[in-house]
Length: 253
Image 1 (cartoon, rainbow, N blue to C red):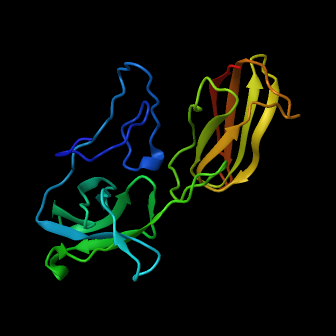
Image 2 (cartoon, rainbow, N blue to C red; image 1 turned 180 degrees about the vertical axis):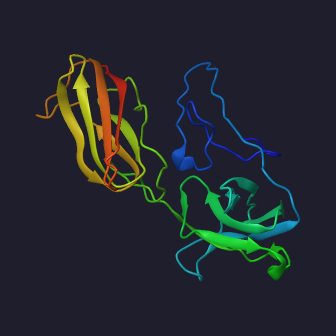
């Protein structure tokens, strides 16, 4: 959203939209809902340079296939803003035109895919302000496991609302960790008593998903009611900065 004049974006609650699907918030709608607004920013530049190429999927050069529907962003290396983008057709080809001369990081976004490596390109008088063979290889992501770390490292700590909520008997809880951190993810009852721990240890930066089974730490079923999930992250890079966030969850049996 949308097509012209603005950089495409995914929905994020209470923030301006994000360019990568991994950082978006999932929306589960039942009935008529209003206020699900997607924030977008305008394309920042115009010029006469261009970058084009192809997005290919596969494990080696002999088995690559064009990937359709990939959003390809040209991000300015100096401002970190999206300056232009294109979406690949069935031949996997993209072309980003009207770019100012300069250096760019080419990033790709398609749900279920990851780029094998980042691509940095400079367009200036040395290449006649044009790059025509910027090929990017992507691979399919493996199925999500109980505690799955993505290849994209988020910028901030974040605890997402669990889904489903209310739940019976299981629910999924996702957290973002921007750097190697000491992490705890614990469940408390409405009286503030700890009932179970989902994780308590050091994790690398990434996106993690955990499943709560509706059981306490002794493996006994929890009763229906309101519970709280508390996420605490303390960075291990020397500043020891702590992050704490809590969300309410509901178990209905």
